[in-house]
Amino acid sequence: MGAAGSKLEKALGDQFPEGERYFGLENFGNTCYCNSVLQALYFCAPFREQLLEYYANSKNTGDAEENLLTCLADLFTQISSQKKKTGVIAPKRFVQRLKKQNELFRSYMHQDAHEFLNFLLNELVDILEKEAQAVKSEPETSSPPEKTANGPKHAQANGVSKEPLVTWVHKNFQGILTNETRCLQCETVTARDETFFDLSLDIEQNSSITSCLKNFSSTETLNAEDKFFCDKCCSLQEAQKRMKIKKPPHILVIHLKRFKYIEQLGRYKKLSYRVVFPLELKLSNTVEDADIEYSLFAVVVHVGSGPNHGHYVSLVKSHNHWLFFDDENVEMIDESAVQTFFGSTQEYSSNTDHGYILFYESIGASNNKS
Image (cartoon, rainbow, N blue to C red):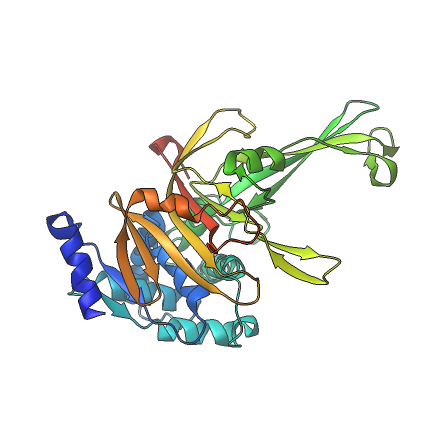
């Protein structure tokens, strides 16, 4: 990687961002699903900052047991504190811990990057919540729970309050969806909220993220055997249902459902559809109907024609430069190259590199409220 590293340094020249590090990650036999997601998370600036801060604080307390969160924080700290600007790091401890924690990732089979991202974020939240609980159950100490995990200020010590803890992982990735169902008989609207860390969108050929989001929020009529039980009418009624984004997240993660189960084939098939994802995205299907602007900063790309084999790479935007991460290799790419990962209009195309998970950060401080 020495040559590739120096090539990247040459390409950036005096534009190499101050204090930034661009390191490839070693592949331990089919761990590209993990490497590609880790690179996207490393270049998610607010997440990285808070993780490094958490690690610095937990090292001060000195009694942190090893878990997936400490392994991830240790890896990010290792990368950010390298003397060299470029190179390769082996995320050995992290991968070992991941396999120990979840048997799903133990085999050398092709794994799903989206499943890994989902597992990782939920696991980090569990660890932070347990730590906050442990601090709360201790006798009065000088460090309140909100110090440990940026928790809510009104958490009650006696456990009566079921107020969920808001960790820094939530503050970055969590959004709220509201599921509205309107009874067509009495017009009563029932709304049910649910939280999300990412949105999984159905895709169509020759479409865009904007049209996929519109479909996600389109109105569906519940009738025949799908009727809705209306509490006001006390009976099953025809109804209209729609999903809206009530609270958009600071970091919007969009998962394109490229793997579809085909009944006739009895297996999953990869959809290579062309789905345009813009560098700047306006989110309009929100409850407030206020357009929220997002900027694309990372793409996890699935390379290959089928769901059970292939490879993952990632594209990352850092300090206005786009970089291509393929396990150990890191190179600079032109912004215009991003569109080569939209997908293809023909079913059988030689281009099998398709955007799979998209990471957008909201533009403007107004959305960074906790």
